[in-house]
Image 1 (spheres, one colour):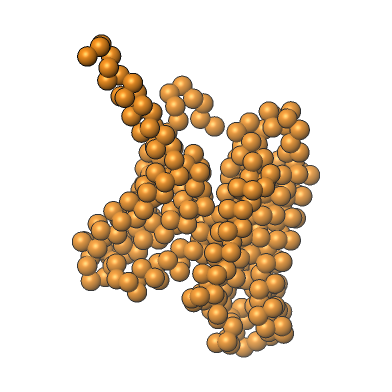
Image 2: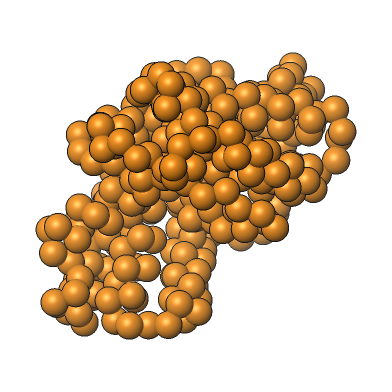
Length: 333
């Protein structure tokens, strides 16, 4: 045989493997494998308190709420922005939806949540573009404002239990199939925007290099505004699912709404990490399910809350680090 007879085949095999590692199928397979791994670990450690079909359904119904918010956050996080006011918007939009549902039924609940969320997003985006200061600073101030407005709205509710969906007929979005329909519609909308419109392309371009995107003719300020509007539209959907699942919403003060920011953000981290595989939507949905599964698995093991948060955060950082390692010599933003 001539020298080097096997070399082309080896090179082709290596090239095929590299192509497979960069494919959407590989990314989704990795996420599914992680899901099965964590399920198996917690199932073995706590067979009586974790992993039954009923419990997994409950975890899924909880995770899709956060996944909807994670989808919205993706549009601004990928551009290097952040919004601390989404928790306050969830509270305010939910309370507006409950208040309007007293008079207009489901139309009031749905439109109240969605329109309130979207309008707040437009206001946040305009304020950010006009003030020209970091988005985190702007949205921390807006969080305090929205919490105050939420407390005013709850005082307008003259029902016996302000902020509560007292009518059992208003809880369709708390269970299947309507909660899955609402969340699925949000996921499909994100997929469409990222895959078939300029919004996804320009958001990624702005995040990669804002100056280059601007020099190429992208209206950066306009697409940042669009990012905030889309974020808070998805937050409106999340508010609808959250208030339905919890059968009501309490107004809070003193930045207490900030706690609602972080679980959606965890899903967004998965989306950004798996963006290179072309499956950010799937990564957010499955990632949120993994986070909720880890949290509930640790609860089943009677792990204290502080340790639970530590382990959940450490696992998230490990997964994101392993799946989002840059090439040697690359610049980390």
